[in-house]
Image (tube, rainbow, N blue to C red; front, side, top):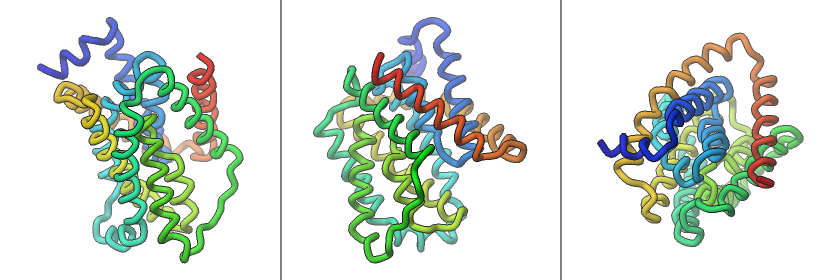
Length: 252
């Protein structure tokens, strides 16, 4: 099968390392509600090209994030509020894929490292800010387009999307649901960008589908862990790890 061919290109034993990465990324998402693509990209980029890592995360990211968009009965008011941002994400990712090409080579690893460092620094030291309602109409699309270009270049779509969404003053449940919408759009747009650059095939999709099981298992374990572990402590551990990985990718 095509997905077997995709995994056969990995060194012996690397398959189980990839499974471990997606399981860990699922645990992170289960605890804090985000982080699956970020953790996956950060760790996979240590031993494969970013473009390969981005192709692997498509289906696990899409399924877990679509699940996060529930309940659907309250989704439409949120979509009306962040719809411009989602259009910006789609347009920015596709435009970024055309301008930047697939995330491959040394520049892609360095760019990924810089994004991880920026995200970690914001996680440690960033102060909450508020976006006034009258600015959302134009600032949302700007944040979306910027996120799209970052997504196209690195495969990571949390910057600046997450800080922007947190600045809207949404309640906890609405914020998690809106992040699910944003990440779902980013995942579909990333797949389109990879396809444009001939970096997403049926084999890559099959390999990505195989990684859905460990991601869901990790997410379930993370949801159980959330009950006994402080999310604040876990987030600090996550941001510290991302900072170290970012430094490594920039200087390696």
